[in-house]
Image (cartoon, rainbow, N blue to C red; front, side, top):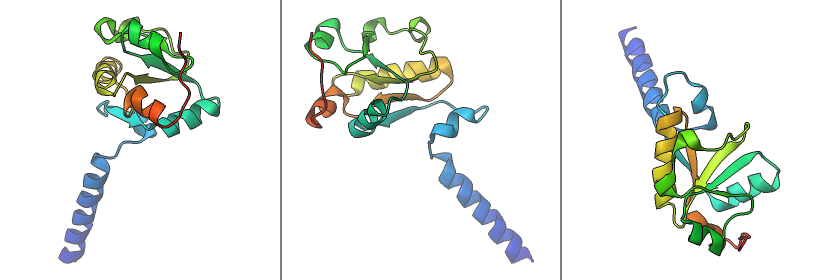
Length: 140
């Protein structure tokens, strides 16, 4: 009986430990859960965009970098001007941030997660990875 109780307790502890670091799209629904920063790979983002999912793309590079090439439909909000409270209403769309390599968008995603209390997503590898994957870039 004691062994069974001990094993049950250990199993519950292991399950809690395994799920503590797991991050899923449903994490936002957990009340009191700490918001974090998630990444999405270029191919996964492209698939979701092609499927017509509502995604608000936010490019946090400088206006000059943005003009040199960006993902279709993206808006430009440079990191040095990035204020989560001032972002345009996503109207139910998921926000995905990106920059050149993913460093600046990671910083912006942290700010967004902290301000919103929800997970924030940014593009893994930035537009460099997007371009390397052969995905389309719009130039102005």
